[in-house]
Image (cartoon, rainbow, N blue to C red; front, side, top):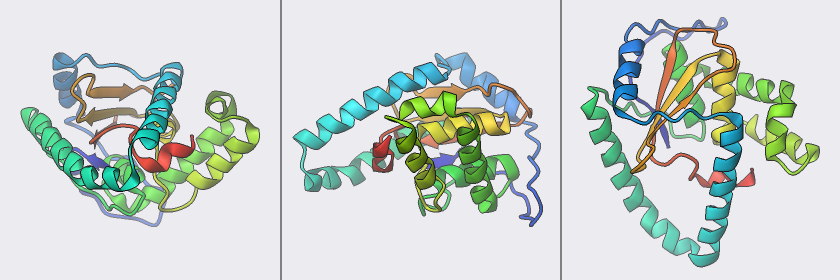
Length: 219
């Protein structure tokens, strides 16, 4: 689950979306960075994170039955959301839920960038195009070029969950700093820095457990 930390209201248009102003962004960033370790996720670090996630998922599937996982999932989500709300409350922030139709990551980014969830398809398209045009950076996370193309085709489909790679691509394609607050006990604040900053707008997201969703298993 990904949800937006703050609400930015704005009209939906049929034209190319315009990134909204983020007058309070700098103050929020200062508050977060003043009280957290603030790890910055680079492409090389992301590779290690994804490999670790893959190993943990394989271990979980081998040692735990599907029914058992589903039974405990709701309780874990509820506890994680409680931790997130408490964590955000400390900074005077609130968590805004977005549509849970499989587009949640892209809806969240759209709401933060443009003030509306309506442009989630555009955000997804930009992320996929960025990964396709920067194959040297992203294809290494797949076994070969064929698997990478299959991955891009899957991610391009509506209602397909985003993952760590799409989050990285969103940051780079829009040139925006992305801040993720998670429910993890340690290292719960992650920051994605774009290779080429293009806007002063910051994207703030909340996640009950980065990299733990089933739909990202294919990576």
